[in-house]
Image: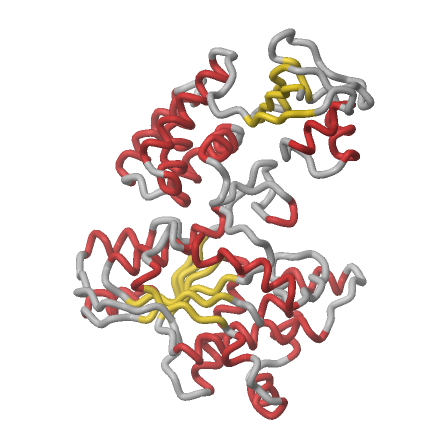
Length: 403
């Protein structure tokens, strides 16, 4: 756990109203939570994240930003990194069984989790726990007591579980344990509030039930909407449609600019803390504008600024305009030095554009590689390397030098 400095609790009705409404799908119990926030009592506000991927993406920052909203009002936020729950796997948002991960995979994935979370919240004033600290110590008797709080019908009536059963898909007994574990996290840290996505609703409610059984006051719940990724599906590391916090400023800016126009306002509300009055103004402009690119550029710059700072955000915007508006080449192109006679695909691997010859050859065959100097596409997957600057797909560039 990191050290904490106790700030003064801020009771500001406007800020409380925004906390309870901005990017919020549901609050249980909203009036009770409002009373608590107005009372000046310090609340313990919990968010759990499983390290099922090495990256935290902007979809996961939606509850992190809500955690920061509580922190900005002076409340004690608690980040639980699910090194134990990540092993078991949550299938709340999955249409098939999530495989168990190995301890080594989890260990590798969580290496930079606090560093990434620190881009959103003040980690020095946050309690950080790994839930293996208490879940790994439970015995069968204690797990049996927890399981007795719920019925099988509670679990199988969940929409995605019911659909899998109706489709004849396997549902493992292991999956029944996950809500117990997430719920017990709330008991272990004595949570007053838990935040999470709408797909977590069952697990969040499980925390309330378990807290009652352990003699604690049940936590209030605040759920946020899920957000679409680059391909229009729900943002998910397993689908690779993510905007990651460790993406470079240029890559992050370009990814935001590739989003569908209808997502601009949703992203402004959920993934930034731009003033809501300004966002409403942009929403009105969107209704009459046939080209919302200017507003999307405001969104892209705002997102990049949050994770890379104002200066890098401005440079990313200038780079984008140079490349995509004026047809130029970005300033910070990756350079590689390659021996003559090697395949072009070797240069793509050296420049970390791809990680295998198979991937590289597929890119070339699909016509995704263009020589910027001659405007000619490289279409032969077995082409030998030639010096020059090349555009790869929509946003990546590489400069090849021969040794």
